[in-house]
Image 1 (cartoon, rainbow, N blue to C red):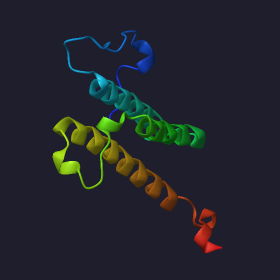
Image 2 (image 1 turned 45 degrees about the vertical axis):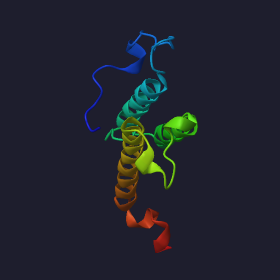
Image 3 (image 1 turned 90 degrees about the vertical axis):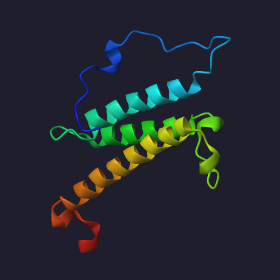
Length: 123
């Protein structure tokens, strides 16, 4: 995260891998690639310094939450059972949480950079 995407999602015309018998399931690969797409949207919409629209920021955050909500159960982080989960599931959830933290830091910084008359606690 942090650098603008050099290849935009709309420029990619390759289909994601299909399920094939005799091969491991591709749910994890699909989850990683869709999270990378969401991260690209966040970088484009949230980290932009000029012309950033609140609606685009909200849409990016909603995409991240939708990604989490649509994650297959076997790829979700289960509280109290994280020590028994495969490393790829832990990595996937670690990246998701890192994106959430970075978005939170950006939004907190944005709140404190507003003029003091806009802050609700000064009323």
